Image (cartoon, rainbow, N blue to C red; front, top):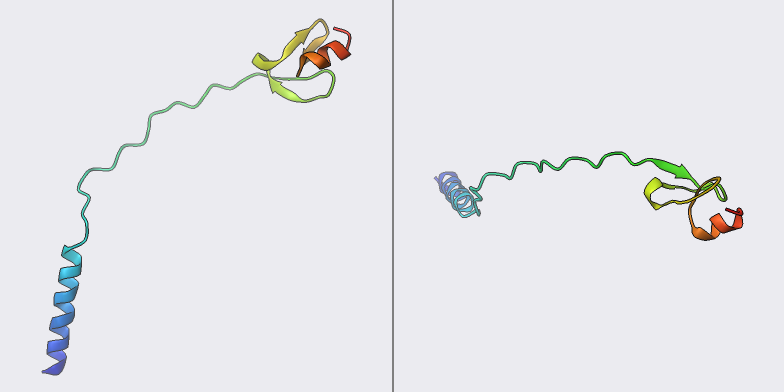
Length: 76
């Protein structure tokens, strides 16, 4: 009889714990449909060899440079 009472108390405690949990019935958000960025053309600085995006490079007569100072040092 004592074990039956302990089992009943455990079952009631489990039932109360399970029903008092916070329920989030909202459906999960679908994954974002963001497209990856397109590839960027990389160029190498003729002075130091650093690779950088073509859009950020300083262009001289002999090629691309990472800074205006490197372009001037090469005589462009």
